[in-house]
Image (cartoon, rainbow, N blue to C red):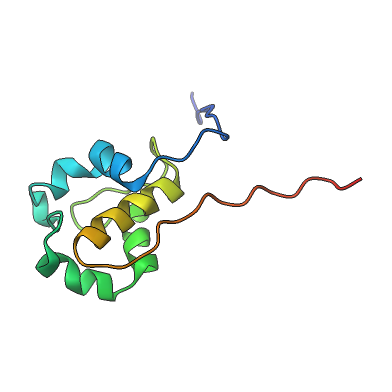
Length: 110
């Protein structure tokens, strides 16, 4: 009986920009406002969400909220999903900075 899977990814690939991730992962629902998703660039729909802060928005995207399933653990890294959230929120009136790539762990210094 299978107990898990292993997936190999290139950890050194360049991170995707928020717009690119949005188009690939988020646009299907957020362009149309499907299942209650706040429509892209709709300041009225995004205003209250933006006031909750970026951490809350990213957490909702990664873990899922309402009809939206969890976006974490898929084709994009958590940082790339956060970039898509920033892209959507900023087009709805937010002023968040796009997350940078996580710092590489420091190696042994000899």
